[in-house]
Image (tube, rainbow, N blue to C red; front, side, top):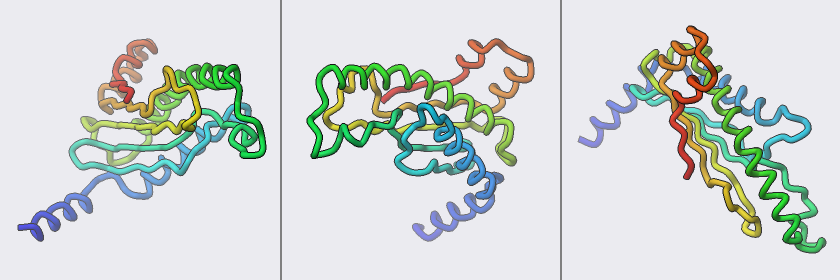
Length: 176
């Protein structure tokens, strides 16, 4: 029984219509987007990872700190950050989370238009795991952001030039 289930799973995986090469290109695009802002890049803790789940769609995950924390703030040779420093850091992170959501939606839109083999009725999901130092003020900063959208609904809205607010409403948005 166990062997039959494994063989069935392997068969479904190899029959998937989304190639590993296309997933790899999407992962590179995600990495480039998050690291491209020279003035305020995201601090990726690893590279984006994507997987195709037959019958559901694609899922991309990325782990990051939404801002690059100066190394001196976490050095044992410098004084600990002040309450004012921690408040400024928190405010900056909260502002950057809204920018992160927009970047995730933009990347998911690109994937919906460029990932060959993804069926129209399947979904695109992206999850950002947000790293925070133990000494940070994390008020208003989620641990994870999960966005999901149906590919066909997104493409239909884009093709009929729907307003940005309508397109944004298509995304299921959760914080954990």
